[in-house]
Length: 128
Image (cartoon, rainbow, N blue to C red; front, side):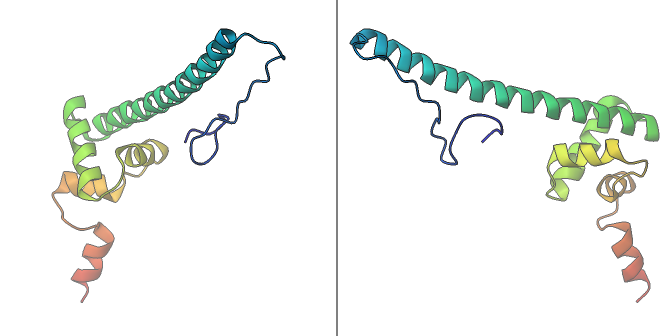
């Protein structure tokens, strides 16, 4: 559930409208419907904002990878997507790590190198 919206953990609205006594039934129904629609629109707005934020960080990560490794943006996205899928990491999380660090995350480096294991584990296995 998006933070900052007036909902319980189960998704029920915490927004309640007190109508004055004698409010016509039609007006009461219309107000309740407006509250319901406002709740739906607030949820949708939060979902769209999250999608936009995700898209921004993924686009930034594509640019970083394209710059670091001289890749076409589409290829950079494929590397990022395969890296995330292969390592069961969310695409957004991996993209954020690419953007926030000067070092390329091992998942991406492994995808570019064709390695199946993290470099740290490969070194450990080689020392045995």
